[in-house]
Image: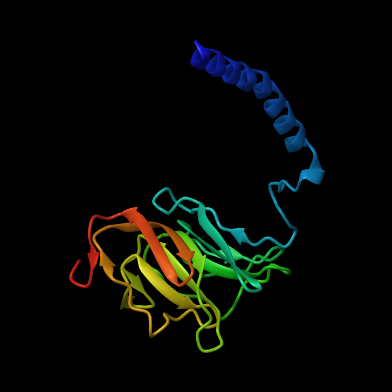
Length: 196
C-alpha cells in the first residue's frame, strides 16, 4: 500500500509541475535576455549557399565546434560560402572555419573533402597549431585516403601527419574527447587497419 501512495504522489507532483515547466519554456523562448539565438545569431555570420539544382547537397550544417579563436562548421553543404555582406563565393566543401569574434572566413583552412561532415571536436595543439577531429561520410581528404575520420591542422587545412585513424566499414556520426581518448560512434561494425 505504501508503494502505491509514493508512486501516486510522484505522479501527481509530476503532473502539477508540467504546466509550470511548459509556461516557463514559452516565456523564455520569447524573452531575448535568455540567450536564445535568433535566426541570424550575428550580423557577421557567413552565408552557406543553397543548392543550385536538386541533385546538389541540401543546405545543412551538421556540426559546429570552437577551436581556440576559430569556429569550425561542417555539414552536407558543398556549394560554397560567402562572407556576410559579400557576393564572392569561396569554395568550401563540407567544412570551413571562421573567426569566432568577427565571422571572417579562414583563407588558410580550406581542406578538400569528398563527402559530408557529421561530427567535429577540438583536437590537441600539434607543433604549435590548433587541430580539429573531423568525422563523416568522406573517403578522401586533400586527395589522400582518410575514410570517415581525420585530424586536420586548423592553420593549414592539412591532415596531421602523426595521426593515423583506423578505417571503418561505415560512417562516423559522432565524436567525443575525454582526456586523451577519442571516442568514435557511427554506422559501422568494423574498425581497424584492414577494414575497407
